[in-house]
Length: 257
Image 1 (cartoon, one colour):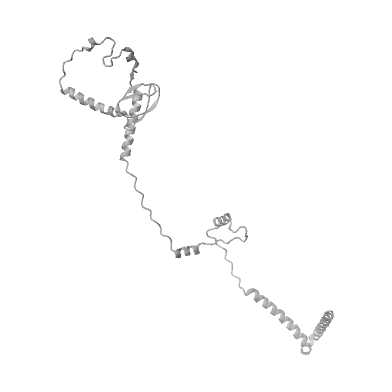
Image 2: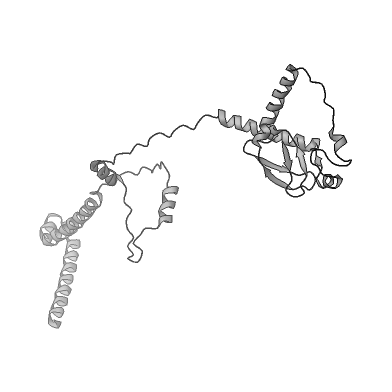
C-alpha cells in the first residue's frame, strides 16, 4: 500500500495490514506532517493477487524470452513506458521507504487496536436493569399512628419567632445523657406540715384555757390549796388589770370611730 504525504508529496510503501479498516493517523518522516490515512481496498487485494500469479507462474513452464526491439526503435534517453525524457523522470518525486522506527510504531499501534477490538468483541453485554417496583402508599391508620408517635416541639412564646431554635434543640438532644440515675429522695408526706401546725395551735389553746380556768376557779383553788393563795391573788389582780386596760383601749377606739 502506498501513502503520499499531502504536505511534501513524499511517498511511502507500507504493508496494508498496518492500516486498520477504519483508518488511522500517520506522520510523515520527511516534514513531520500528520494526517488521517484510510486503507485502500485495492491494496488489500494486491498480496492475494500476487500470490495467485506466483502460483500460476510456478505451474506453467517459462516461455523463451522475446527479443526487445523497442530499444532499437526508440531513441536514447526516452522512457519506454511513459515516453518521456530525462526531464519528465526528474519531475516525478522519488518514493521513500519507511524507516524502521516509524514502521515499528505503526506495527505496535495496529497490534494494540486489533487487541482492543478483540476485547470489545469478547466483552459480555451489560445486564438489563431490574424493573422498578412501585411502593404502595402507607395506609391512613399507620400514617395517623406515626403522626401521634412523633414528639411535638413546644412553640416559642415570642410571636415574632414562631419556629423553635434548631441549634438549641439539637444541642439539647446531643448532650442529653442516655441513662441518668437520679438520687433517691425519701418522699415527703403531705400531712406532715398541717399536722404539726394543728398540734402547735392545739397546745396554745390548751395553755390559754388552763390560764382562764385558773382565773375563774381562783377562789376554789385557794380554798383547796391554801399555800398558793397569795400567788393566785396576785395572778387574779394582774388579769383584772389587763382586762381594765383592754376595756379602756376598746372604748377609746370606739370613740374615735
